Length: 68
Length: 246
Image (cartoon, rainbow over all chains, first blue to last red; front, side, top):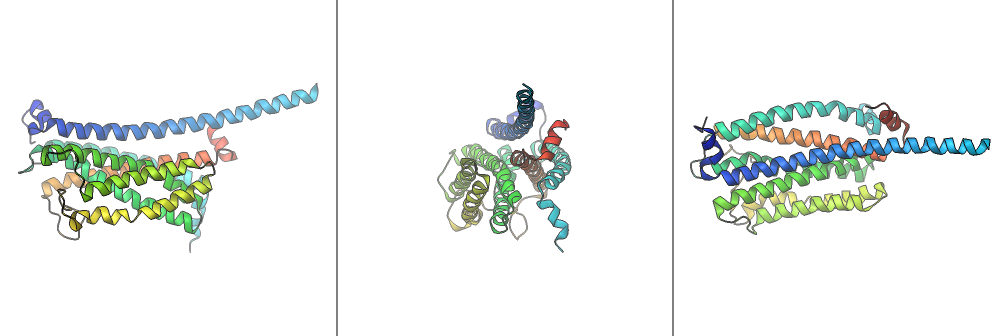
């Protein structure tokens, strides 16, 4: 262990700001692309589901017209 | 001879294979990230010249290496897509570009935050930094070009050509520190010589490299699956998959 205390660890030998800025930005960027990827997947699933429902409704409407 | 490879040209098979691989990449990524971060941040010795600011190396170097590695694999996929017209290859290009762009951004950002305390400047227009910035623009160009066409066959071809043209930038980035006078230090591990870094500092760096590589693998596969879903959204297998609630 290179550091004696938590305060010492966060100070990073006086370079705390730069070190934590780097690690923070990296964490946020990586988290960002993970969230983006997962949201895109959820959106695609919803889109396909909506499409299927829509087709069903259209078919139902068409068969109604035929009976009238 | 190539028969075993053939089924993977089918979208559904690739989708399922990617789904099987993602958990493994995720597990290795999480473990190596945890180990690499704790080791690099708390246990690796401080640099005798740079003190604790050198710890930025543990994200800067893996992100920079992977930003070039991602581009190279993107170029291979683009080449396959253009020459053999395999559309899954074009989807792989589209899947890799955003992840590579994020790595390039990380490399540039952490480089700036490292340059400020060490060089006294956030940014200098030297060869290494400028060529890496061009790499970011190439990534953004590929993403924009791919999204500009609603015809995805055309989009894949255009993005693929841009990707292949941009490959010239990769050796320029790598050798920029040797060809031009620069503030940026030379290569520490990506050379055919003994690494110029102490073992106690090198191990956590290699572990972080593994973490970034598996992160790229997992994210690329997830985005690859998204691309397949989008393009095959009218196929029965996708409908069955979505309605199955999987």
